[in-house]
Image (cartoon, rainbow, N blue to C red; front, side, top):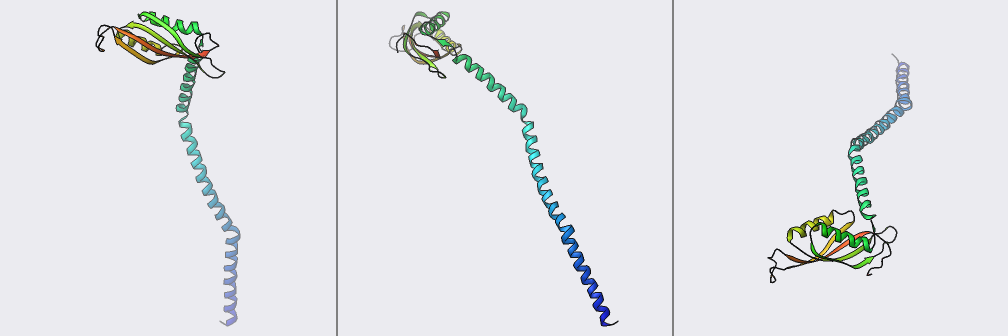
Length: 190
């Protein structure tokens, strides 16, 4: 075998190597790059799908929370949209006090604030009455359950049957109650 033969064989091998490398570079390599990009995109889409599934699984919980918020909003709207004036505020407390069995009941308006659009007005009411602890507690609980927002704000008690202390059962009570609602212009004390 002569030298020319080996040069031709070497040239053929080199040509085949260049052709194989060129073919790989032109045909296979772009597909491997596209494949790697597709694998990365698939992983991202799988993550998005899992996030969507997790969110969808929580839909009943979110729906229940939205329904609860809606009920709470309706409840608070029903309590804050109560129209109030001097007469209705006084009648609310007098009626509630009479219903709870409080004696020597007196109710006066200390202060009233008219409500601007989108805000609550307020009545600052002073009550005096004679009661025992049980009826006083029932009255305080009844204030909280009223349609209008009624908040007992301050309480002074004197035991009538124990002037030197608080051990008696009969109490002389001075209570300040705040009533919130839609208060128009009032003729009471401002």
